[in-house]
Amino acid sequence: MRQANLNNKQVIGMVTRTNAAILKVYDITGTVGIVKQADLIVLEQNPLEQFEALSNMSMVMVKGNLIQSPSVVRIKEVDNVLKSVW
Image 1 (tube, rainbow, N blue to C red):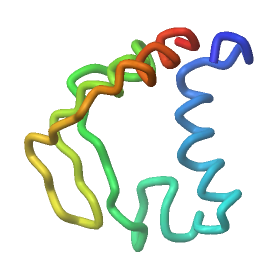
Image 2 (image 1 turned 90 degrees about the horizontal axis):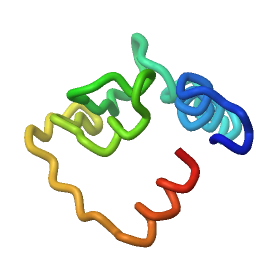
Image 3 (image 1 turned 60 degrees about the vertical axis):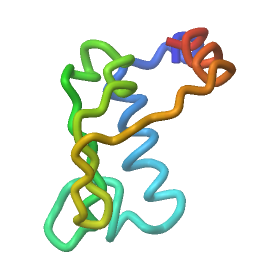
Image 4 (image 1 turned 135 degrees about the vertical axis):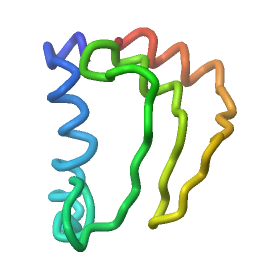
């Protein structure tokens, strides 16, 4: 992220809208909208201000099903790579 000189909004757009378009599934996912699949995460903090907020999810909705206290298994190696690019 730092190396590409992208801001948080650009990165989030790339991993949602852009990937959905590349995979040719933009009509059903990638953004929030009517007739789109409801895969959402609810966060305590704003990821546009602090990208690390994406690591602390309060709730997750997958295909319309709400998961209220999602558990996350941390992988040290992945965390280290992510820290290097944040």
